[in-house]
Length: 152
Image 1 (cartoon, rainbow, N blue to C red):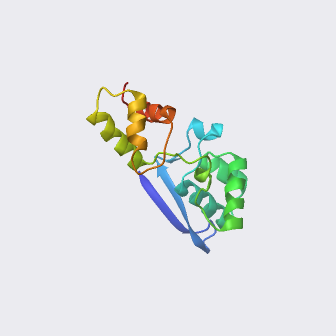
Image 2: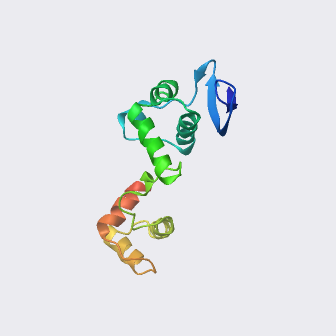
Image 3: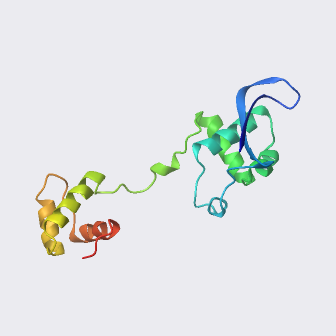
């Protein structure tokens, strides 16, 4: 694998941003999966930085889309977000409702389950809710037990 960092445009003039391109045997590495093209997976910071760098150098949306195998809509959206906010990070991961049970709560739940292996769900929920964290329903306890890989 070869990583190429160029600080010059095609005609030899120096540019401000480094233009990063990864190549493996002449093809661009890190191409997107089908899931990304389907629209339910977002770009990581490296991919966003590559898109912004290529556009800053002066490549057209179509050139960048063909070179890095992203849709034209994605290229224009990422570059517009970069121009407006100046950031290449993705802010979409902050969407959605926050989980009521944090990692710490899940570790505590694991200790309760391992301590009393024959306890029923209402008993486990009562033990968990007697502790310092927020109270949760029996259904939330059940969902977290299943997610952690326990069988009840």
